[in-house]
Length: 421
Image 1 (tube, rainbow, N blue to C red):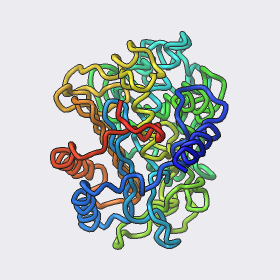
Image 2: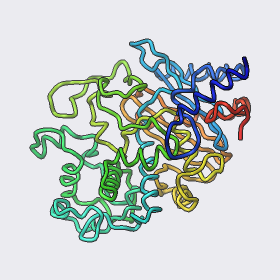
Image 3: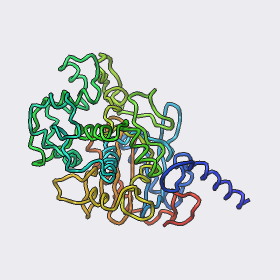
Image 4: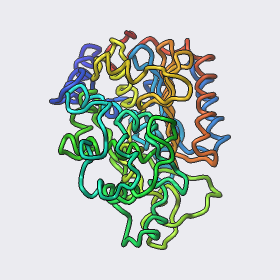
């Protein structure tokens, strides 16, 4: 019976892998279950996570832990969809918010490796990548011609959210410019190029979602494909990640296996992003999530997100989709005042950190210097917004300290193998 079971599992893995490029990993979202991470030694950790969820009124949470490119643990807590009585499983996919920027940065580095792009390429102007006449005609501040691809990646292009973040201020933009509805990406860029930059490119930094929307358009311009399709074909599937998608704006637009998102019980309805005049729950129609593209629109499971991280970390356990030189560029630590290429922090002492926050979502990747990576994503927003990452970082630090030695020595990236790499 034991041999028969092993043979059936091997057959399942072969069928799940299918025809594809990339490492020989199965489609994790189909195979991983909570039962695989029911570890007696970690029951106390489970209770701590449940208390954390109760404290913050979080409906559902997905957690995975990786060490040296081996997936040790993957488990869902609470509800994926409480109304349908669906429990959170490791294969559920969730909005990962600004973690999307790390995915976009990997796409830019891939284009650089292909010789189709350079980090010091100008973005606008006669020799720029986005040199369309409609963009050039809109520019009034000639400092735009100094913006490079790398400055977009590092949030050093000079954009400001004074007057509102253009990616989260759609109703005001519709009204201000007399539009019939929400602008598409190219129209929004054309309108925003009329504004003056806050500082000369490269002379300062300010976090910018708009900059990563521009990077999404750069990928489309260079490849001639949609941002989503090219990223799936050339970055994600080669990494073994089959179930990454750009999010929809409403519950009815969810992907197969995607969770329901929640706000706090006292969160007031907000005007619908498209200027309809209707009021909606903030996480479903309050913002144009899909319109964020590479700035914040991806959905993924935490195990596939871990597999993606393992594919850009420079370690040997999982084959990297980027060269060692590209990985080093993305993780290079300049100083405390500068962002990494896609990463929030690249301090060797703290490790690599990438956070994300949207209405109904909070996401954290903390890749510690010892090779351990904790990934946590929730399907519930808190009133702390982006500041909630401070609490998830502290939670993961505390759990790592208390339970880091209790995880089984295994690799759930390859469920048929019993030992950790």
